[in-house]
Length: 148
Length: 432
Image (cartoon, rainbow over all chains, first blue to last red; front, side, top):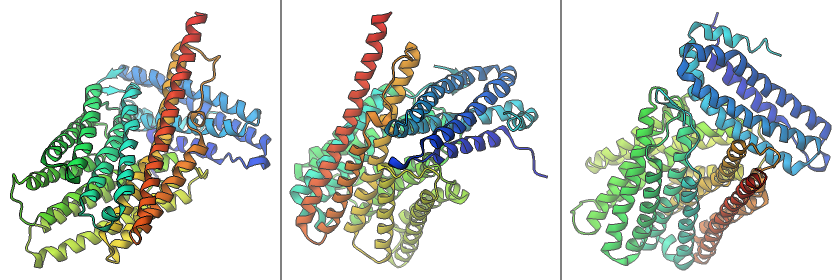
């Protein structure tokens, strides 16, 4: 049996899954199926929210306990989550209003913001968490799947 | 700034630093275009013509140098959590030195005499040296965490080799140094600059950003881990082969040349394949810039394999890849940075009642597509100019137009940013 997945592996994969949900939303000019865009946007937002809640409620608190120095970076990540949530709201609003140009522009801005944020987490914070939490890390990572 | 145990996750450098570099760079591409408009017949006839050498250095030192330094200052804190030390003086000095360097080198190579050449070479070398030192120092500090940009030092080292060889060539041109087999050294300088610095940089950055921004599957591990070092070794071998007698040196050089061509060709094919299989299928100006640049790279590989002219190869690599890819990148990175700094301001002021302009409002897509069209037309006409110089002149004019249009789009983005920032700040001051 393979080793249980680390925090880095599990959460990096979840990032990619979220990316794909956003990418899958397609607008087709006048033929755009807006109710569907609204549904897919909601599915993407729910996946992002699950990811954020896992980090903020499950991962960060024990990490801050065992590695007090990580409190700065985790606080920064929480701020990023706030910034991303603002854009997620804007995206949902553009979908609800069937504003194609705004939807595409916000979607791209959001995509860039998320990539910049993910790069910091995947390159720095998750490896730090795997080292600091050691064996506990894999148990925590497994709880992502249990979140709804 | 939050710094813990050398681990700093503070935001990117102040916006004006990369912007200063990004908004100056297109002027040098435009200058190269004007030079081609004026002397296309000479530039395209032989790469040894003074005008061709001048245009090449306007593009590499002025355009590519500034874009690369600006993008690196921005990316390193994000990808490895390592800010460049003393970023403000470093960025300011590099901006000025590369600007003077590109201008001096171009003027000197065009026949402006020994002093512009000497000053140009010295300032360009100093500018690149300071930039590389700052970037390598940042990477060194982050080495224990170094997951993000493992391959990044290699293009920087290649740049340093190209700069050192360039300095040597300058001394030889000025008559201060006797350099036998001068042409071999020129070829090595060009190889380290084009394949080592530009090529390895595109490779290193590409394997990182293409999967993220175009939501593609990852590159195979051997490409991510081994291809860069392998090609770097090939360049080292090429350099050593130049020191051997021709009977041994030439076959070795041909073999290593084939390795370089195959390596970059494989990267281009893989990139196109991954982008075709990416989840983010929206075809925009930047993705088209990638496709055009990878096609030009494959064209250069084909040209090498078929023994085509170095002028054709140079044009494909310098304009097709070296101008195209950074242009496509700037069309995204500048509006994103403007938006990012605006949103940070909005969060700091708590002004969520105001909507800030998203990327496409800062830099309209239609404008970006027009930029791509101008660039593509410039490349086509310049290639045709190899056969018929009058096409080369048109190509030069289009290259200048594409660069000036790029500049207009970037300036537009920056001024919309300033206007939105003023709105955020004045209304918040007005309402308390």
